[in-house]
Image 1 (tube, one colour):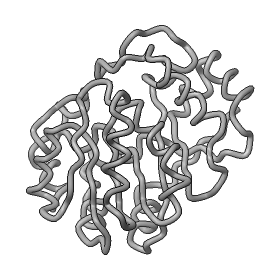
Image 2 (spheres, rainbow, N blue to C red):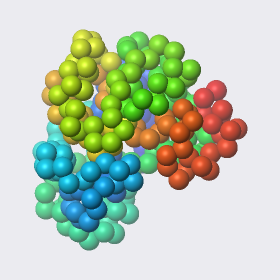
Image 3 (spheres, rainbow, N blue to C red):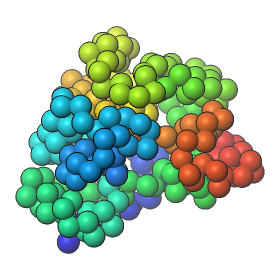
Image 4 (spheres, helix red, strand yellow):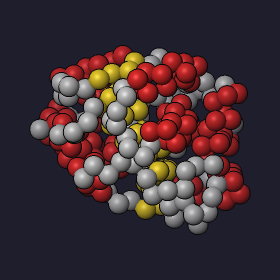
Length: 234
């Protein structure tokens, strides 16, 4: 049995408010399809799951993660324990000392209208806030006016890894980096952690922000009422 804890949104918000940097990577269906099951050519975002470098780097991010409390790995408990191929692979290849977190805490907070503590924490940061994701996330300017944006391709941004790394490192100071880059986000955070992970936040927030920019790209986005969206922001 792979233990997965769910400390709740406030745990992460408190670490942000207390300026205690951490990185978080979330592994979902697309990552398992690429690394273990190898049963899909593309995920729901149409990202190719057969790019050799991406598949290799995703495996390395699971097999050789930084073993520190400041590097958090997250997944869905049901996937880890109820899909035999995934459970066997994790048992065989991933360090036993990893304390897995529940990966859906942010989207669940958004669904329930409880996301505002995170939004407030990001508005009050004493460091740059940088969104790394597709062009439509520039719509977050209305929510976070001081935020910076590093635009990546909607699909297969792994190919642009070197250029993306250069832009991230050009910030030149500790920052809060919010990644919305599909499976590649796990690779980016894993590979950047030794360089900037001790002072910067790097959080894989996936498609969390898209609905707040008018892009409903996940099924749960369509369930969010205008009242819930406003409650999450105010």
